[in-house]
Length: 312
Image (cartoon, rainbow, N blue to C red; front, top):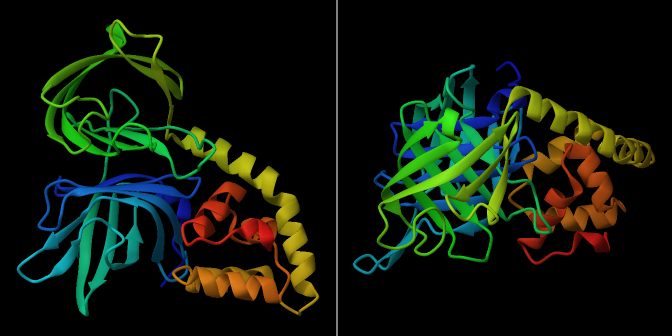
């Protein structure tokens, strides 16, 4: 199989308007399960993508897409992290994956890229002190929206419904169909419609309840320019980390490519990665340089398993 292009993965993808996922250039993701046979809910965390094999690994920081079945005394998982995923092809508008769960393999599941000719379809907040906490707003050209919230303040979760965007009025009106975060998000409990001020300036926007503009959320659009800028910044920031890793690994007759493949192959075994990194005296900055991720993302990955990467 020809190597896949990581850049092509960035964006929002939807399967039959019941399961969607957003992959961001900084290694974060949110998945929305809102009308499938599996439990509905939101997953938040970081992801890794092996361009050679197509395998996607997930590190989850928040997951409410689980349901306990008293009859079978089992937990049922929704979302993306409940199965092994392998991308088989990516085009500008189609993502095809194979899914293996509990020994069952389903091949050729097609996701469609979410597009919107009127406004950028994917908006998100940049990492704060905890890189796992963030909001995502998806505005589909077909007139539906998804809201993902994980900020450990108001209740987290997803919302889904319809929207009407008026560029000339800098406003967007949301109509609720599903609300899984109670008092959080766009809709408080019992509210079915809500108008917001949505002021767009290039690839930046602020979202605020009409009449309460001083209380707003700052969003960034996921555009080609935006993620290229992000990639350029990341390349600049991690250049030294990459060089340090390359020079350090050379002492063990190892290359960065070998180390990267090891990390991607063992992404679901953070304790093992941590131990090997200690054995080879590879610190968190070198790990970030090897895989091309921000340092906060690497720290968040280990923190999810109770590991402190600053000790490496």
